[in-house]
Image 1 (cartoon, rainbow, N blue to C red):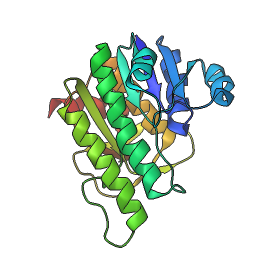
Image 2 (image 1 turned 120 degrees about the horizontal axis):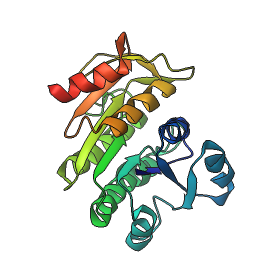
Image 3 (image 1 turned 60 degrees about the vertical axis):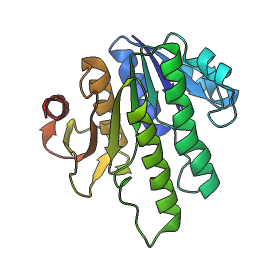
Image 4 (image 1 turned 120 degrees about the vertical axis):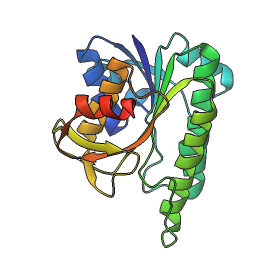
Length: 217
């Protein structure tokens, strides 16, 4: 399949690219700078220049044309200000899913965040981020496309464990970026999860079983 990843230079996205290439998919990686092309190519992907905040609808459609699955894995990052979270985490995701619908992609998978529906009162910066994610998730649900919304817990580095806890609400916890990428790969490979919004943290259930179970609920 042709998989297009928005935010392809992010840590989860780069791991995801290597996983998807290993299972035989062609991966197109959307990045904001040609300086990032070499990294995408080293991961096995085809780099495509697209500014998720500034590009036109036509440029989005050109970049996504031919996609079977579109993954939105971009994020403004913890050091960014509120406006950047609005223009990337919210508006960038909305532009991407709208383009995915226009070009006729079959599925849309978005990496959101645990707590998106319940932002804290005591951390305004984090609340802005979560509200942006929640608005993006709502737009994805409303779009005319089969979609999966993945809400990981606190992200950590380290190797994939291959086991997670997954559900509508699983409580606070950590998960490695490699395990998030493995969950995304399983969703893409199997076609499971359409219409689902779920949280995921590290756990004891094999990823294959966890994804199958969330789909069956």
